[in-house]
Length: 241
Image 1 (cartoon, rainbow, N blue to C red):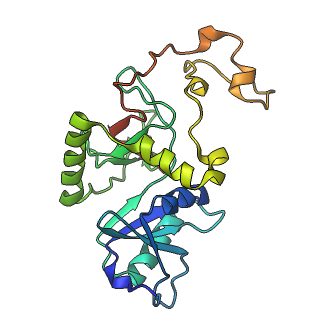
Image 2 (cartoon, rainbow, N blue to C red):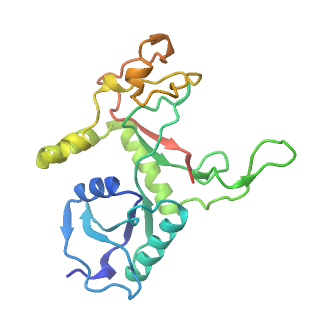
């Protein structure tokens, strides 16, 4: 059994799909912990990535949101008192713009910007006398050690790129049963529709079937080349509830 005191990175997944992906990328998987806090209800996977011992937890099945995530984090800290860095890694919806060419499968890293901490809680605020929505809850920014690490990663990616695609393909080659559900869709399936396009309300089919007949509804984007990072890594604000 593993000593809970040797784990210094906590990784929380919101849904089982994220949990499967997280477990798959561990360089080592360790036995379960020697003991847990008496009231700890979490499910854990212990392991190692590089030089970091990591404990991964997932929210209870069917639960989602701020309260369940808070409970999971508190229980983790009770059982793994040496955790100093907390990460939430998972699936999100990209918000592409003229300035940010975000595409299917890209990676977004939370980074403080314009007075925001890196994660913007978009569902907590107020509207007064028909004025615009005003956020009233602000999250603290990540600790200096993480922000310094992000600066270092940015520099490496700028000069040398990354090996994310190779790492993903390596995992899928080792675990081929994951290909059907976890392999990145073909580039040709990544279609961005104009913001004015409304999916037909009486159509339960995909956008590709219901909306694709009129190609003028699509936003034209240049094809990424070998000189581009695929997937691309973006740094900035993440909106979350």
